[in-house]
Image (cartoon, rainbow, N blue to C red; front, side):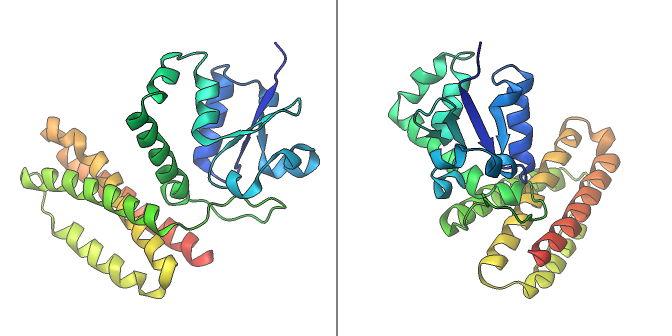
Amino acid sequence: MKQTKAIIYDDNCPMCRWYTRAFVETNLLDKEGRISFSRLEHTHLAEQLDLQRSKHEIPLVDLEGGATIYGVDSLIYLLSPRFPFLKKIMGLKPLNYFFRKLYKLVSYNRGIMAPSPKKTRVYDCTPDFNLTYRLAFIGLAGGTGILLLSLFFQSGLMNANWLFALLLLSLIAGNVFKGNDYVSYLGHLSFLLLLGGLITLPALAFPVFTPLVGTLALSVMIWQFIRRYKLLKAS
């Protein structure tokens, strides 16, 4: 069947690259139906886009000149042939509201969840800074991470002093950032708490792996902190 829709994705976003590639690999899209913003200048498709909206909601364009759909609606369009119950779910107002808010939470914070160096492009689709969704992400990710790590340490599996020391040093190191950059810095720290907490989960069920899991969590958090700190300073 001829491809009539194309998703326009941010090729500077690891998350966007991953899930749009998954659409192709699972035959929800043809290869020709996945076009990066970097290639957009070589096509006529930019004329069909609201470029500001496209920063925050992934667009699905009609290759035959029809209307462009965005965000949750574009995902539902692609997924509903395989999962027809999605349209019924989205027909329920509370769930529709929840998933649209969740989409925005992820979209505005995708640079925190999966950061990458910024590239200069004709069409810049980097999300705008949104204080409300950034603070919501900090609360959710940081709170969940602290909860998971608390369960790990309360079990007596490992001493928590190293975590407190790292957090203190991280907060001190963040003094070089001001304003929105500092809020984004706190977002990165919150994500690292969540990441560390998720890594420690296996130790709760299998205490024998505690030393390995604890060392892995610490190593990943330090590695990611250094990487993200450099990226944020360079931005």
